[in-house]
Figure 1: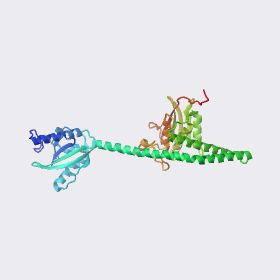
Figure 2 (figure 1 turned 60 degrees about the vertical axis):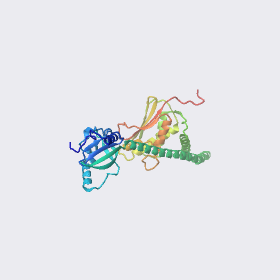
Figure 3 (figure 1 turned 135 degrees about the horizontal axis):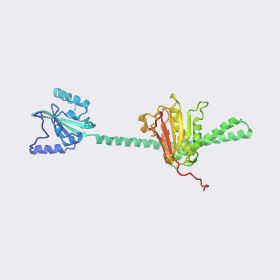
Figure 4 (figure 1 turned 45 degrees about the horizontal axis):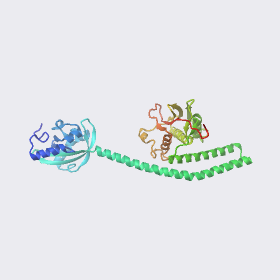
Length: 385
């Protein structure tokens, strides 16, 4: 070991040296002292805790042992440049750098460097503070702020949704009344052929359904319990697929389905659950529009007190970076819309005591979304025993 290398602060202390030694080893921040050749002269207990090295393991060695490799290789050159030019880059100016633990872990530290001329040459005192706790607090604060902004937007959407639902009720009611009047007049005067009359009746049914959807969405916004009825699962599944394929003209159907036989009735709000399933099927159909193989398959199975609607497509799948945000409102990557579809759909499912999730363990390519709803007890009306 070089003569200028001193283990800790010496063995025989004067009063001032003892005081300095006490400060050195009780300091909360790490303190390391090096000479002009970057050899470690002193390494306090806080540094031992911070970097995992005992002082005896580093005394006399190059300080770059506690630096990340990319910085360690250049450090000696930085010191020599300062000795040659006197140009200060970090001395007297604290900044954030990275440290390297004995186990190889890299972590952020705040480094302040001072200089002390001694009979043995210049020495440099580095004071290091672990920034991980501060970064952790900052990260939690940023997350809390993001959640606050998110909840503010959700609250605004709740209010806007309730207002829109209220305003749409009046024109929808008017449309329904006009259509019903046309239907009654046509039947009375025999003015329309059966095909056109059938189209009007379908329009009446869709207007009624739109009114039901708006009403249910208002109830969802207002956190009301869903209006459950006993759903025949196979009939319900078939009706949802027909609704998705409505307006496709003569195009070949790409949606297939399979329903497990003898499933129990599903006690759920048919309007809300229909919206969820239709949304999943439409998303799946949209996902495969540019795929070589365009297939969407819906399978319905019973699993331990639940019924699962599994919607699988042959599209490109969901990118890994999108999965954590997939069911958050306003996080959708579509060019159109606010990204509310999956967020509202999951809220509906959870409000029924179930869930909606992406099956990340699916073996086949594409994406598989699972709507899981509890079977529970059948729903009885007030007139039933």
